[in-house]
Image (cartoon, rainbow, N blue to C red):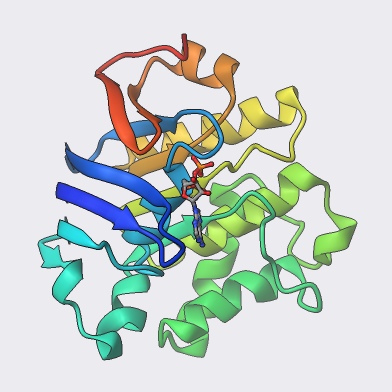
Length: 225
Ligand code: ADP
């Protein structure tokens, strides 16, 4: 589903963020991406979302060679993956319902479909009845749930999460991990960059550890160490 073959990423500044990285992630996996600051985690995520292109190597997602994907096709590709950020990135002037509705609208869904699906998505992330709340009236955990609902609105095969619990307290983070685990059991592949030792240790998922742009560990049921 995700395949990196000898991926090297050198920024124009000369910084080499990934060095000859090869790895495969299969459909339905739950993968933690860990490593100290500067290890290359965000770079890997930005390659997967095709914000940047590798200097060398072949990157395939869902059978598509991203290195060869035409610029014109990037929006369509991005609609097939879900992305969750540390800072939620909700539209502040829209309430929770409309943030999700907007995502469905962008996907080309019709009004009737949207009216039927937004409540289902709110329910899925545990926010039934909170649709009218504006983002700033919601707690951090609730805002992140809205952003997850938005990310999975198009039923993506892959959900990419960049430090999704980075701004949340531990208890709220665990609630969020339960939600991600639930989505994973429904079949969504989850790739999550994190610094949270506790979460990685308790969840016992696949751990890919980067250091200085190199994979130094890849364990099926790993911990943080
Ligand atoms: P992490 O997410 O693990 O903290 P990054 O992928 O952000 O790591 O960074 C990896 C390396 O790439 C670092 O040395 C960083 O300085 C460098 N880097 C990241 N983004 C850029 C950029 N836009 N331009 C130049 N160098 C960058």
